[in-house]
Length: 275
Image 1 (cartoon, rainbow, N blue to C red):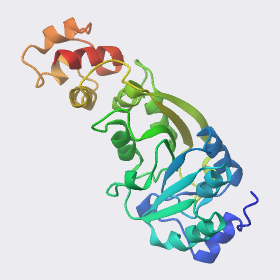
Image 2: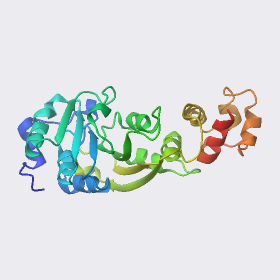
Image 3: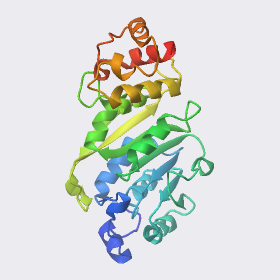
């Protein structure tokens, strides 16, 4: 990468940036991999990009090098701000760093549509951020695509099909409103410190409208209840939802004795509409 900036190992050493477990940090130092993630997000030239947890700025640099119109990076760890300031100086006017917690900051005020979200998400907030991005009050959302790194196990849940062990609430929420694909895996050896698990990048393209009509809150509620007790039959796990839940299950094309992991997205949406 010819941005005139030093290698990431040097950046980390000069700024004393040891990764903190309490912040879910694992720094990705291979600039070939950060470049691959940035390219998987698609054409960035006419896009603002939101990045969460940039750390020392490896992926940030790749996003800017791939031509992102502007990158808004949210970093909670103030130790990383001087390193990110150096990236900002190398790309004048194209990087805005917000110091704070991604769960509480309103980033949309700093972004101009269309927006792509690209991030090596901190492990401790990744799933919660994804659920928030998939369940806004209004759809289509502020983002056109999400290119996100998770633990491989979480990534597999996002793209899982009915009948598989990984299929669950995240699969339903992701596939209801987006096209979700597993892009590629990343070995733990690529990180400092190496996590105990393999990571994977997932790419989600927002659909203009949900795949099947349903009220978002109703769908979220029944899916949460169904999968919270995934070994139980649905007539038991959803008993609190409706007095005549067995009749409604049958109308939706679901057997009351079925378990959540065998029910398709379309069937869950049909049940949500009946409720």
